[in-house]
Image (cartoon, rainbow, N blue to C red; front, side, top):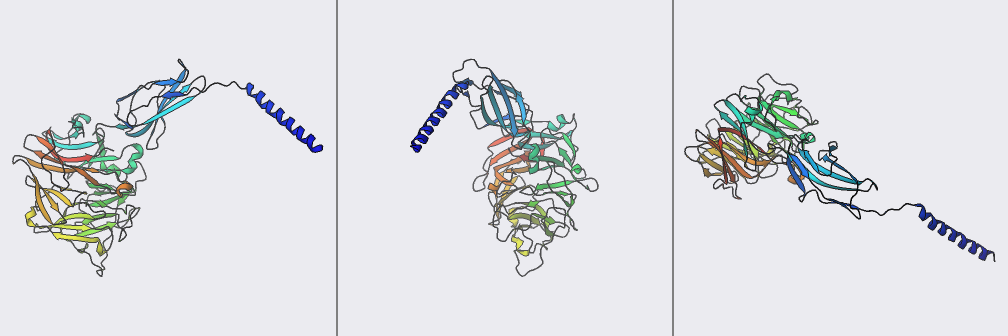
Length: 504
C-alpha cells in the first residue's frame, strides 16, 4: 500500500513539473530567425589589386521574410603576415583606396540586423601588388647618366623611374650593376625585396624597390662598415631564413635575420678575399648522405681555395680538411685559379663553379656542402672549342645541367654532364649582347627543399645596337634550346644590368 502511494505521488509531481515547463514557455518573446544571406565578394579565390587603386565591391544582401531591414556594415581585413586589423568601411558597398602594405590579406564583410543582432559574415582573399612589385628591373646608361626602367610581366614598360623619383638626378657613370635578394624576414612588413646598385669605386646605393628612389647607402645595413667606398658585390639569404650573407670589399658580412629589416653584424674572420659569388645550402628536410655540414660556400681569390661556414653568429671562415685518406675529385684547398662564375645546379645540394687559369683555360668544379675532401664532387677542363675564355656574362639553370654564357654575339650553353658546349642563339651582327638573366623564384619553401634560388624556364637577353637597347624573351625548351625570341621589348637606352623580381 505504501509503495502504491509513493508511486502515485511521483506521478503527480512529474505532472506538475511538466505543466510548469509548458507554462514557462509562454514567458519568452520568441522571434523567428531570419537568416541574412550575402553574395560572394568575388568570383575568384583571390582579388589582385594595385597599390593605391580603388577596390569596389557591391554585394547583394537579402534576409528571409524581411523586405526593408535596418543593418550595420563592417569591412575590414587582416594581413597574411599577422598584422593588426585594418578597418576599411562601414558602408554597404566597398569603395576604398588600397594603401596598406603590399602583400596578401583576408578581407571580411559583416552585416548585422539591428533589431535582432543576427549577423552574417563572408570573406575573400585580396593581394595588394605594386606596378613595380614584380617584373624586370632594368639599369640603363643614358647620355645624362644611369636610369631605371621596369618591365612588367604584362609587357608594360615604365621608363625614367630613377630620374623622376629623384628630382631629375641620374646615377653617375659608370652606372655599375644591379644586385639584390629576397629577405624572408621582410615578409613581416611586406618588404622582402632589397635592390642595390653597385659600381667600382663608389659606395653601393640601396633603391626603394617600389619607387626606385635612392634609399641611402648600403653601408647603413652594416654594424661595422669598412672604409669607404663600401662596395657590395653579392648578397644572399640562407634558404630557411637562419642567416644572411653579403660580400663587401672582398669580405663576407654575416647577419642573423631576427628583425624585419636586414642588418649585418660583422665580417667573418680569417685571412681571405673572396670572389663575388655566394652559395648557401640547407638539408631541405632530407636525409642527405653524407650529412650536410656547410651552410655557406665561397671561393678565396687570395689563396686560390674554397672556404665554408656554418653557424648562427660571426665566426671563422673555415678551410677544408687536409685529410686525404678519402679524397674527392680535386683538392678544395688547392685550386689556384680565378673564379669567374658560380651558380646552383640542377642536382640538389651540388653547386657549380667556373674557373680560369693564368693561361686562359677554363675549368668546371662542383662542390657538395661538407667540410672534408669529399666536398669536391666533380671537375673538368672545359674544351677550348667552348669559346668560354672571354665570357663575362653567365646564367645557370637549376632545371637542366646547363650554364648559359655569351661569346661574341652568340649565346652558348655548356652542358657540365657531357663537358660540351653548343650555340643556342646568334644575335644580329650589329648588336652587342649586354646582359642575360633567368626568370627565378627566390622564395624558399619546404616543397622545393628550401632551395634558395630556382630558375623557372625563361631567359632574358638584352642587346644594344648603338642607338637602342632591347630585351629578348626566350622560352627555354626541355633540351635547353632557345629558338627565336617569343617577345622583344624595345625603346631602351643601353642596358647594363637586369634584376628579376618574381611575383610573390
